[in-house]
Each structure stands twice: as structure tokens, then as C-alpha cells.
Image (tube, rainbow, N blue to C red):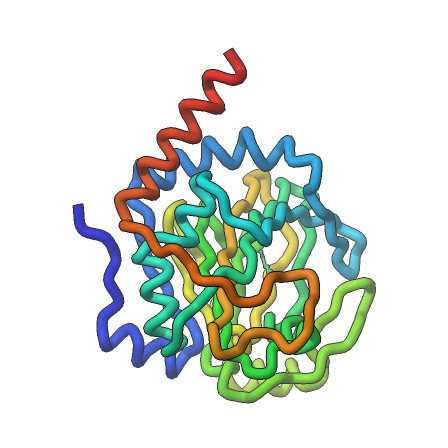
Length: 264
Ligand SMILES: O=C(O)CCC(=O)C(=O)O
């Protein structure tokens, strides 16, 4: 089986746009297992957090700072994600955290315009040499609140962030000017598609008014030379144990089997 391997042209596009969409980052069976596991594990996660948008709609997330031997952790460590990140960021990378994002049908809330570095700046990360890989667990469409990005916005530097209705978001006046100059792209994806995006890329997602859930997992990375200058709620540098791509399917099958046995 051959897995995604970054090409020079894709690196150039990432540098220009601040994101790279990789359809089929996961093979079909991996995407299927990730969906099944998420349904069982995340729906019953007692540590699940909720966030509210400006209208008070709830969006849920299940966040981990640590890696273990489950499928999510293997997805962080596998070559097609970790080596790609290394090339995109031009440095050794480490796992900053990963989180499963859940927008339930009809009620799931929005994420306002922001840059991830808008938050991570506050964590003592001196440079925006950080990025994420979002992997779709369900399809994401305009109707269920897919990610929207502003191509090229990662080159504008860090925008001021303000607190609005309980969410920290990029300065709305500046965002309006940026969107009218650079335009906005909807990132509609199928299960298993991956989106690599820079920490200064301006992005948001709208509420889910459809009758389909929208789930994804976001794997966030920092670079070794950008080790935070202070302790905070995400980890500092430790080496990432990068594993072969085949491990994703192996760990997924193992986790699904053990979950299935535990409910019998
Ligand atoms: O899951 C989403 O729709 C957006 C999440 C997001 O923007 C973030 O976690 O930075």
C-alpha cells in the first residue's frame, strides 16, 4: 500500500496558501475504523469540554496532551502526518496536543474567525512555527459547518485577538478587510481527508444546521526550536516517536477489537 508523501509542488502551495488539502490522507478502512472508534470513545469521554459561540450554541471537544497506543496517537506519530509536518515547518516537530471536534446535528455551534497562533502566542511560543493536521471523521460540508479559510492570511502576521461572546477571536474589523482582499475558501471534505494548515492561517467554521454530525480530529504540532518559554496547559518539547504508516491501521484494528470485546 502506498501512503501520502509530500511533493515539492505541494510544499510550494502550502507556503503560498498556508494550507494543503490532501484528499484520502487515510485509506478507506482507516477512516471507517476512526469513525467507529470515535463514536464509542468520544461520545462517552467524561473529560469532554464544551465551548459556546456568540449565539450560545454548543460545540464539543475532547482534547489530549499525551500520546498512548490508541489510533488517534498513531495518527499523530505516523510518517504521512509527522514527516509532512517536519517538511512543512522545516524543523523537528513535537506533539503539542490533539483534539476531536464535535458539532452535533442542528445544535452544533460555530468557531469564530481566529488564528491558532492567536492563542498559542499567549502560551510562550515565540514564533508561529506551528501547524495542525485536521483529519475528517465525517464529511464536512457548508451545511454542517466545514472549516473556512482565508488563503494566504498566514503571511499577514499575528492579528490582534479580542474576547467576544465568550470566544477569543481575531479583530472583526481587520478580518473583514482581510476577507474582502483575500477571499474565503470553504474546505469541504470526505471522511479520511486531511488538511494541513499553518498556525497563522485565519479560519473559522459556522454552526451546524444540518441533520448530519460533523466530526474531525485536529493534530497540533510545535517545533523543537520553538519550545515554549513558559509552562502552560500544553506540553513543551519531547521527541516524537515517528512510526510507519502501516501502524495506523494496526492500532485502529486493535483498539476497535478491544472496544468491541469490552461491550460484549
Ligand atoms: O473544528 C472546527 O470547526 C474549528 C476548530 C478550530 O478552529 C480550532 O480548533 O482552532
